[in-house]
Length: 221
Image (cartoon, rainbow, N blue to C red; front, top):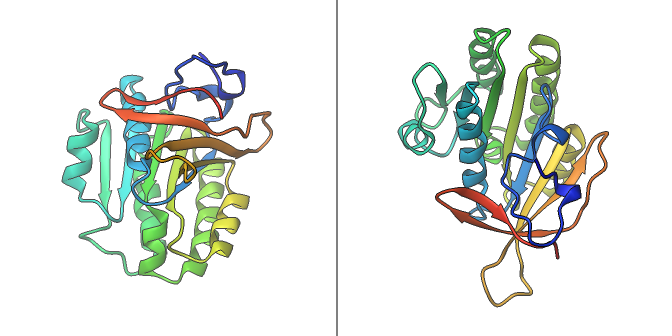
């Protein structure tokens, strides 16, 4: 397996097979970027990799229908569980926490992944100031209740105040960034590891492409 900091020009890195170095059980990974950059493709690959390795997957959605998510990810009914907060809008952020963790409790002893898409939409439903405390609460629950859970939290930048983004970054174990290369005439997508608590890593930007096979990377810029 090739890890990001070990990457050399010419290698194609498959995400999330960066794997053990960054995506450890109990950690919270924050994936940030502008809308339309490719975060949903990352979520899809994150979930499909878990299903192929016989893990349970919980996807909480706030801006996409549950049917679309199920069709996109696939997997058996006992493996993929979708919590639809688009149609069944919660009355409080605590309702989301309860629904997620009631489901994860059923997987005690089994590796599981949670994907939340997206936290920024939650900030439009409620006060954005709730987002950082909510994320901190989730991280504490994962570490205390079931260390086999790995969480990927999607966050669209440019929607809520920058101070909220900084708070979320500080509370996450790993922060991944996606952006468009504004210096290029082409619509070039870039990816990097912004931070990874306790791990050495490169902060170089890697161009990436999206295909049916997932996300693959080119040379670092």
